[in-house]
Image (cartoon, rainbow, N blue to C red):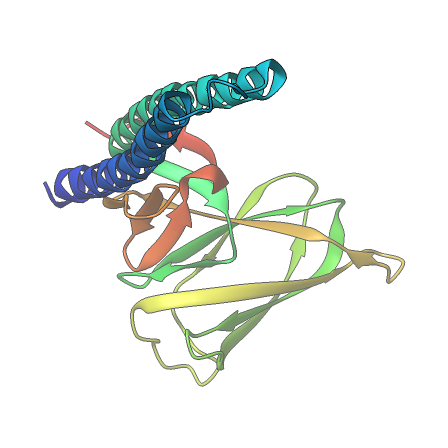
Length: 223
C-alpha cells in the first residue's frame, strides 16, 4: 500500500511541475502574439513592416507553438513511462532476486552472496565488514570457476554471533600461480518493498536498497 501511495505522489508532483512549465511557455507564447499583433496595428502605413522581417517573426511564432505541443507530448510520455515503471517494479515484491552488489543483510544467522571469479582461485580471502566499516570476520576458502554461493552464519572473528544488520564483503583471490583473480559479487534476497520516489525504482530487501537496473535474475515467489 505504501508503495502505491509513493508512486502516486511522485507522478503527481512530476505532473504539477510539468504543468507549471507549460503555463510559463504558454504565457510567453501569448505575450509574443500580443506584441506581434500590436506591431502590425501600429506600423507606419508609409513604411510598412519589411516582408522578410515579418516572415521571420511568423516563423518564430510557429516555433513557439510547436514547442508547446512538443512539451505536452513529452510530458505525456514521461508520465506514462513512470506509471509503467512503478507497476513493473511493484510486481517484484515477494520475488527472489539476484543483483550486483557486495552488501546484504545478516538475518536469523544467515547472509548469502554469489561469487563469480573470472577463473578458479586456489586461495580467496573474504573480509566481512559491518555497516560502520569495522572488520567483523575473515574467511579463507577456494573458488571454482563459475557462479557459486558463499554463506556466512554470522560468527565473528572472536567467535561471538554478530548482530543482524547490513554487511559488506571484499574478496582477495589468487590462482595457483599467485596472480590476482577478479571476483564479481552479487547479492540475493526476497524483495519486501519498492521505493518509487527517485528517477529509478529502488528495491528493498530488509535494510538493503538495490536499484532495479542492478537486478540480474529473479525467481517466482514460493507458493
